[in-house]
Structures are given as C-alpha cells and as structure tokens.
Length: 187
Image (tube, rainbow, N blue to C red; front, side, top):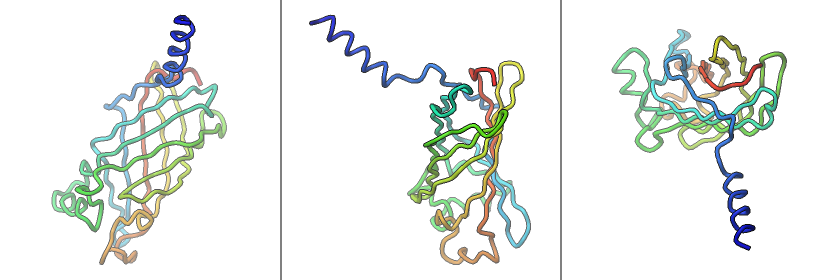
C-alpha cells in the first residue's frame, strides 16, 4: 500500500511539474516594443522589464505553453514627461494595473519556422483574444522568436477621457517582439 501511495504521489507531482522542454529567456537579446501614431507621426516605445515563461518543442507545437508578464511602469518612450504621463489613469493606470499579461491557448505550425500563437492579452483589466504570428531562427545555441501584431488601444481602455479621439492618437498600435531563447530543439 505504501509503494502504491508513493508511486501515485510521484505521478501527481510529475503532472504538475514544469515541462522538461522549458526554455530560458536571454534578456540581453530580448525586447518587447511598440509603435503608435500621434498626429500621424510614428512614436516608438518599449518595455524595459518583462518576464516570459516558454515551454516549446518545435516537434509538438500544440503542446506549447507561452506566457508573458510586462511591467507597464517600465515603459520607455525617450521623453521623461511622456513616460510620466502614460502611467496615469487615462493611459496605463499602473497604480491600479501594474502589469499586462499574455497567456497562450493554442500554438500551430504555419510553415517552416513559422507559428501562430493564439492567446489572451490582458491590459488594464481588459482581455482580448489575439493571434500572434511568430518566426523562429536558430544560430548556435540560441533560438530567436520574432513577430508583430496590431492591437486596438481603445479595446484595452488605453487613452481614456480626452484621448479617446483617434485623430490625435491612432487606435492601432503595432506590438513587436524579439525573444532570444536557449534550450529549444532543432527546427
């Protein structure tokens, strides 16, 4: 009976353990950035702090688990006064909503080294389904995942109040990322 209990306990623990194929993110080669338009002029920004948890096997993409947590107060726009403004309630409201999150729900192959990652993006308490195209490239022991997708800022209540007017700040925001990973199997 004790042996059966021990084996059952180990089986349960193995079910909840981290996947064996979990990858490590190389911070120095990774970035989450965005481009918005203010009065028709592109404005580039990025987030200095984020965490990613990736478990991905190129031979079994449907079993992948990809999650991001982004520190919204780490936004960098190149101008201190703008950075001080976007953390306020009309924009990211970082006191109430300090993080944005993404959690994958499905991953499927879309060609050689290309994948579509479906999941839920949550910003400022609002959640939207997104599909993110991802391209993978390998060099040495590093796999680089890159991609871009467009969100509607007003779907996430980014730019409330007077800023809802899309003639001043466009509704479309392109999100771009580059994620350097170690531990990914051969493509």
